[in-house]
Length: 313
Image (cartoon, rainbow, N blue to C red; front, side):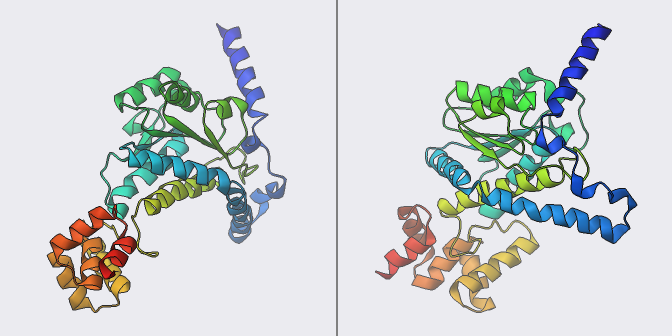
């Protein structure tokens, strides 16, 4: 038993040795000798490299967005799955979609290895359990209409690879986000989003550059997909859900920006539209009443710019 455990540990050490995010960063070898400003300058210097790496895979991210938009059109969902930091980032992106875009809380879902308790505290062994991943997806009723996004900085996380393989086996579109190339990871997905950001400031601390890259990609996937299904007007968050005082104030401001009207006009239109900024904006821009505005938007599949053009014509 002891020999078997040692062999397994040796194999894992050998695996980590081949992962770029586990390399020792030659630019930060002296970081423990620096003052606070020096440390921060090193971190910032490394962070600046991340956006350029993500820019290099925009064509692949665009393919992923097209798949997500197609899934939404047929009632499918966007489901993120990951372990540790990767899982938490997926959940963060998912929970921000309902207030930002007024979508249901089941349209974008985040799953983390170890369940909800793993959001706050690491669950030992969760990321290594391949069967848990399949159970978690079955409990979510993953279907062929859905898009599954596996997130793993290392590209080797057994829980995530198992999830992606299961997703492919039932016909779901599978996207993989990683920060170190791994052939097994690539084979387990349909669209491979590999942002190789290199060695971390602190060796192996993938919550840093890798986490930043993953956050950027997740933001791009959800935001671009929502824009492509009509959740914006110009660059305004027109479908914001006014669920608290700040968001209600934001909705008023968005209507004012979209129509160039004053506060009182925006406030009154929102009251008639039951706090729906898209309906309120269409009413102000076209003179339609609330029922006409609703019908017009349905005819234009929720795209406000198209609805305005149709009403004006």
